[in-house]
Image 1 (cartoon, helix red, strand yellow):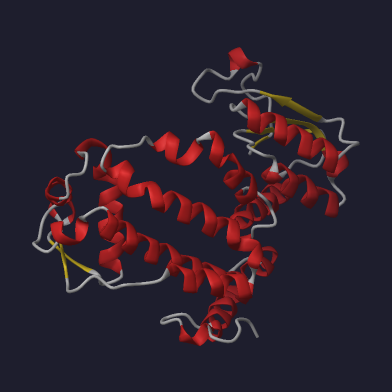
Image 2 (cartoon, helix red, strand yellow):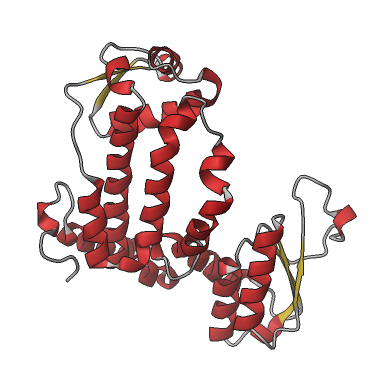
Length: 294
């Protein structure tokens, strides 16, 4: 049984429902993927969806959109009423309005290209902290996802108004720690992507001498998941070369250090910067030279 005391008090979230979803997934997924999508993971995803929804409601209110959406309007009209910067606000505001319409906070009318939104009634007051606490009780390893989302949400209204840049919100030096904590295989909400990818590569990898190129390797968590999977399958020796690439020098250094510590005897590992916007051949990667691009 998953969940704990008080979880049933969170509207729309049920540990029992998560167990039912996991059983349904187990009947449809390839056997290798079933353990990744168990009831515990499903419940964490439900909690996180609710957490993001509550943050979205808070951003909507803080950005002055409550008054701007009392009358029906397009994305552009609502942005103008709220005094948002039109160029940068259009795409994220479109997502925000659709998100709240899907949760019945807003009413959406019209066809895709001419959709108009308006508030259905009073904007609900929802506390994200209650969901974060439910996640802490259930699986605290997922909390870096919550910290990252909550931190970004605090700056989102200022971003929509044009007062702060997106890179400052996401990638300022003071926030590097958030990404280091998030991009780890201990964080199940993030790591599931690495584990699915590792299973796919392990199944598709040629049986000997394979050359693997990883693009945007970041802090090395995807590499660690893949190489760990190959080691468990007894196939690590079949890797001919594994070229770990990353454009950001800080990430490249940390990724290299993490992988060399985790796999000290992996002589097939190499590390280099690579810019995906430039031709690969001029960066030492010729056509047909790798078996897997990861």
